[in-house]
Image (cartoon, rainbow, N blue to C red; front, side, top):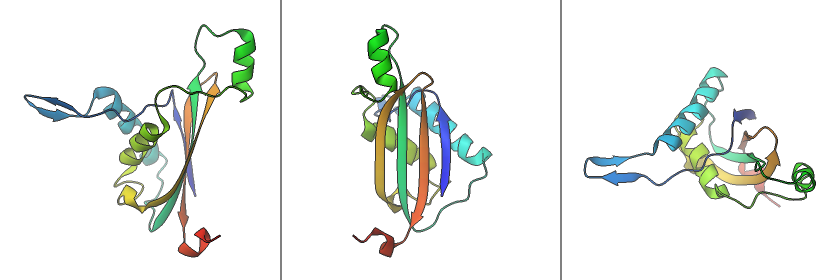
Length: 138
């Protein structure tokens, strides 16, 4: 099992930009993917083999003009973020960033789970597990 925390608000994978000079990844996405790779490398986590399971908890910032009552409900998990970035784009950004360093290819991930919460200090928590076929049966 590998687990790590990405500081700052969740960032979703943005669409590639096409110009007359070619195609490029938007800077916000490129920077976030670089941060994820750096965290993985700094912790010297190994490259995982075989089937993988990924679990992500994304903690979004509480909007600045939120009443005390609403803020309390957000911190207790009564009110949850139904705002962008979408969970699929957050997962895509993390999966793409970890390609070739945490695993050979994100096609190895056979199970994913993501949840969104509010927090005073936004961050993303990632957990990767190697799984075996017999572990997945009901």
